[in-house]
Amino acid sequence: MQWLSAENVVAVGTAVLGIIASGIMVWYERRVPRRKRVGYRVQMDNPIGDNVRLGRANVRMGLFDEAPGMSDATLVLLRVENDGSQGIDRDDYTSPEVHGLTAVFSDRTIRGVSVTQPDDTDHLMDHFTAARGFGYDGNSLRIPRVPLNHGDHFKLLVLLSGGRVGDPIQLIGGIREGEVHPNRSATPDEKPPLFSRAARLITITLTLSVLALAAIVVLRDDNPPPIGCEKGALRVIGSTAFKPVVEELARQYEKKCPEADITVDARGSSAGVNELASLGAESKKDARNVIAFSDGPAIGATSRLLGQRVALSVFTLVVNDGIRLPAKGLSLDDVRRIYRGEATRWKQVDASLPDIPIVLVSRNADSGTRQIFQRRVLESWERVPSTSLDCVHKDDISAPVMRCELDSTDDVLNKVAEVPGAIGYSELTLASGHRGLRSVPLDGAAPSVADIEYGRSDYPYRGVEFAYTYDRAPSGSLASAFLAYLGEGVSENVIRAGGHLPCSSTAASGLCAGE
Image 1 (spheres, rainbow, N blue to C red):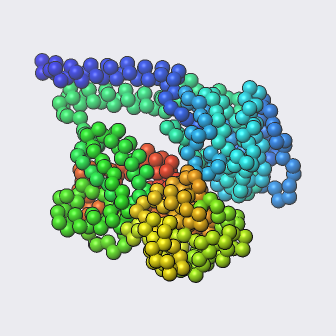
Image 2 (spheres, rainbow, N blue to C red; image 1 turned 180 degrees about the horizontal axis):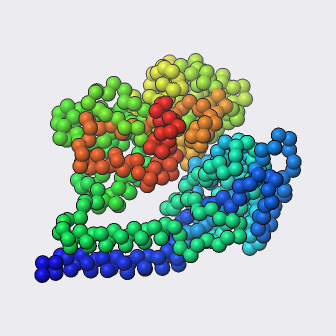
Image 3 (spheres, rainbow, N blue to C red; image 1 turned 30 degrees about the vertical axis):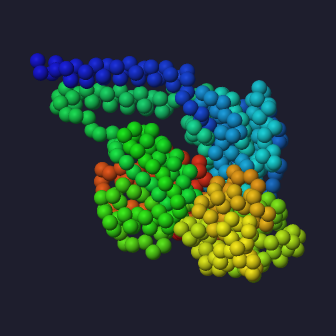
């Protein structure tokens, strides 16, 4: 009989194996969760007047006092738990801030918070201090980097005013090689279900999919659809500030699609965009395998270059560690005086600073970081000419200021950390992990991704990362597939972990569109 062909027997056998595999996966999900996971759930959200049962827990910070203007007060009990298979250390949190996670209570204002925990995890309370980032402002609660063993949890009892019971509550942050995710809402003492909702859904979906595949092969003898990966070679050029994120995105895509070969060759935003334009003018076929990333919109780009907004990046001025600026940092007027060459020694900027020369460590003209700095901060170009090749010896001894130009963000950071009195600029995440230098607030606003995302800051030194192709990337090409991959959830997590805001997930706020 025709349906007993070798292909159909294999398909039916695959269906049977798929059902067995589903059972094994459920067993595995129950006993060995696969990754680092921090789950959270709202266990109570009530008006103050309601009867509330908080469960058995030790309370460290005490109960809330009555306060004026609290007629619309609500009380929320938020449970944060390690529901993965591995322990979570302080270094596993990917936030660029001191704290690890941020709880956002939409349309409500935090008036007080109390931390509780089970009797056997009293050691967790030592981490809830202001020095480790614990605190709140407006509708945002900063949660420290609390190490959690498998099964550990703590609860946050939060007093709020404004808004309504049931308004959205979200926990924001990232875990290296893991995730932060909402769990099913439960009462304080309710036990979680035997199997997670995801396990049940995946099991049912996998079983139905395998059965459907077997039916299609037996009845129609069609080939299964492609998995969506494209093969071939792709070269990614341009921004050095965005290079670490692009390298990780390329690695993740190659892991998903083994027949793809993605090379990252970052030498500056303008250099990348200009190279792409030249390639397209010579051979459109060669240009179709190239994507150029640019910090900000490409300057002087031809109409054949099409840009896709990928992420909002935050940048910062950096100074050598020996320059102890006031907490408010530098005013925009001070920065412009420095880069016009009107202030040549630090004592001329602030009397409390050392009387040593200012050394300007800049990027070359191909740098998108420099172009955003000139457009968003200086509102002009860098007027002081280059007077040094190594940022140490002044080639023109008559020049009042020493200024050098370097090829990459890493070069700038290393040189600022090395040279006394030096000042430069960099992407924020790269600067935050570098020794020997300090980030500089502007007009009292510190560089902060979270403050910008939640509308708490008008910090000016920021810009959108664009991905450029020569004409539209052809459907079915590796370039087109990689650009589509940038908007997927895995890629958004990579972008956030790198200290940037993915444009695909912030479209409603207009942050990317406004840059």
